Figure 1 (cartoon, protein in one colour):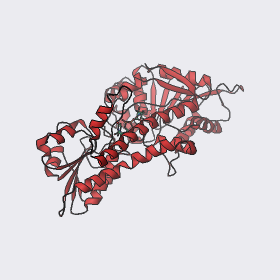
Figure 2 (cartoon, protein in one colour):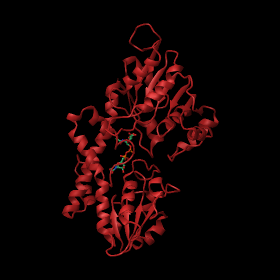
Figure 3 (cartoon, protein in one colour):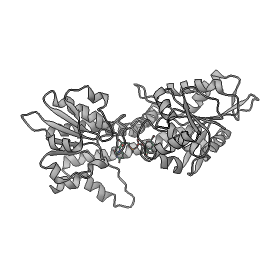
Figure 4 (cartoon, helix red, strand yellow):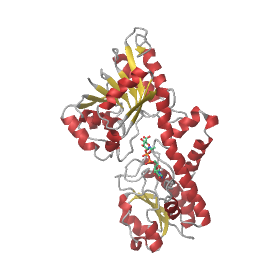
Length: 419
Ligand code: SAJ
């Protein structure tokens, strides 16, 4: 039968493409008309390795179509954003809107799967929204004779940059609102997943996803704390971590200018909101990581030449290496703060090989320019390495010369030490 994927972003589109690649008919649904027209033409509106070819072929084969109208389908996969509100609780309004669009299309027997990262209870809430609009239906397994819908949560776990590999290879946690729901959802993932399909209840699956990202956040916070300690003690944190990681049970992550993206910097807050009295460590890790950009700005301030206006190069604006995604990017935040600090006389030259124009938060400032790497290296007094894009790896001691360097990723540590 037909599978509808709602939300054609970083998760929905790869999922739609992966299912269509296995010969199933998929209708992609998005409220954004330009996304729908791009996908309809077989184009991908963002950068993700190997996705383009799969989408192009699926569209050419007539297996993947895109529309703004909710179709009738046998399975609905909801992959819409769940941002956080000012109080750091989850904004479920996109899930509500999707539920209300799906409800009139249901005939009974369909599975509705929530893939969006969600706080505990969101899948049950989605069921309430669906059934409020369709009181003639019941949740499968509740056995009161009405036509049934199946409801499950199956959080995505793919790493941007490796999505097309991980979407197939990763194990999946599938939480059913009832056990029958989990089984029906597993049938959908069996189409394209080679990883194991692990069934549980919806709330456990919801918390599981949040816990995975919090685990990473807490571990990055540990690395970031070490970076601060090493700054104070005059010790090279990269060498320290390299050595500590030679212990068979130690595996410290990398410090950086903060944690970005729309997942790791967001999801831990959903746990804190759900159990505020029991989540001190998770909250502290968030705060530790959120404090990093300001610490980088302080380092840049200390490195500025005295008594004259300065040119600073910000190398990388994306939230991590080798992606074009600038959302929730600490690098972008740091760049903006440096521009403020430099004022009218100074200049910030930003280098981001993955974008053609400055993002809006920088474009409206008169002292910021987008430049290529060699121009930036030539012009700047201070080099701030914010993202370890592979384009920056080949820079040599000659290009860096005697300039002040703030290397937040450790990518140039050998070059800087050798000059
Ligand atoms: N970062 C560091 N140091 C590190 C690792 C990462 O500072 O050692 C920073 C990155 O630069 C970036 C941020 O953390 O700013 C997050 O990057 P990431 O590569 O750790 O993760 P994401 O956000 O791209 O993807 C994560 C993944 N979750 C886990 O690895 C537990 C992915 O599997 C999830 O599917 C994704 O979140 C998601 O969508 O939830």
